Length: 254
Image (cartoon, rainbow, N blue to C red):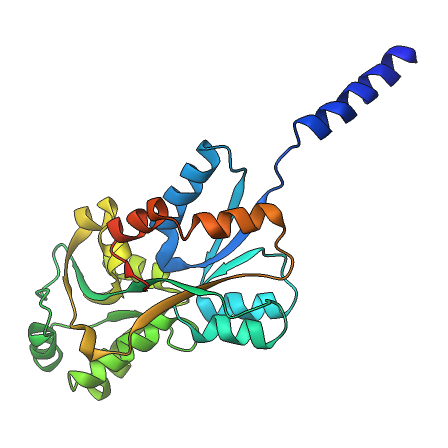
């Protein structure tokens, strides 16, 4: 009994002197996955504690947060999702910009369509029947889906391609549809198209920024986020993290 009591006392003392880091739970837009996984791993390696990442479409994640989902930090692929979370009372402020995304036309190997930034061959493929399916993220949930719709309208293709669309619940799912040949092309995030598995699967061309509203991406510390979450939130704004975001195809959020 005494030995057991001593072990409990020692464990209690150690927990005070060497506290175990609580796990941080981060809700993030699917487009951020490659960059955020690298940043989280670097944070943990440097003694920052465990980070659990949950990826999805920004609007869906925002809705989950407003319904009480236990997240500490929210990184959206747009600004409005974060603003709505703040309005609902789940964040003390409207957060901060952390990056800006880019939209690309991705075509898998073997596709009859060529990747070009002006969507010229895509337009021809719509008319001559080469395009059977075009993958985009669902614009009701995903900012990259909304950007894709705007780009297609700018190119005068929206009316022609609506019946050919295959929609992913988020941009990662849309990218998978394009990469695995379920679609002959896809409008996806540059951050995903740059990844080694997508480079092996096909090629891409970056669309002009002026073709769609800016993909300004905002993040916020949520009301349940404690000191550990605050440290990671600050870490995401440091030069090392910004460098990783840029490496994965994101522009500076400034």
